[in-house]
Length: 218
Image (tube, rainbow, N blue to C red; front, top):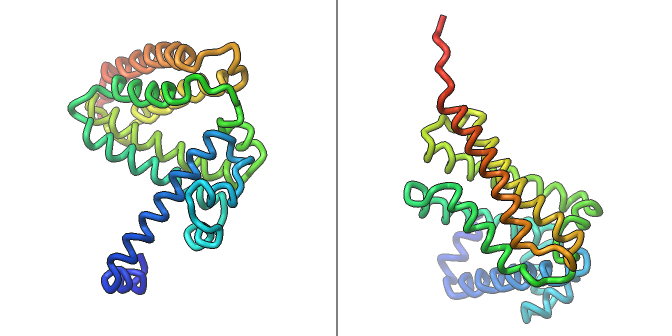
């Protein structure tokens, strides 16, 4: 927050709160529209209408659709960080990850339009692909810290990052397969199958990492 913005927030707290609430409403409406019709088909006018704001108001909060998608990713990462902080030390990593991913699969279960996924959009829009790569990298980093804390591994070691990356990749592979054939495939079943395989591989990797003898210093 800039000094000028901070001064305005102090002088006009109600105005600032309204602006924050409007931004949240726009972002929520945009996310829902991206899921329902696909990123490529969601126009700024449609997002403004869904959020019940004028399109000019929309542009005072977000410069573009890419900016909106990046902000949506940021909000998702903030929620993930909060969930992790509440769960680490209380819920096992694999249970945490499975519950989180299956919750998403449950919300998307029954959808028949593959455009609600981001796969085709990522191939067509370099800006969106870059934002998504950054999002996935940070997501894996957060989950790797969870793994390191639970299994007593150094955060900088390979094992936590590889385990987190494996689980994330498995969930997205299930999502990709389902989005390619929503008529024949069941997202919940695909996700469960992918997670079962990934979890066995991840646990084997963790066991190997924890049992590996420490190299003696010369």
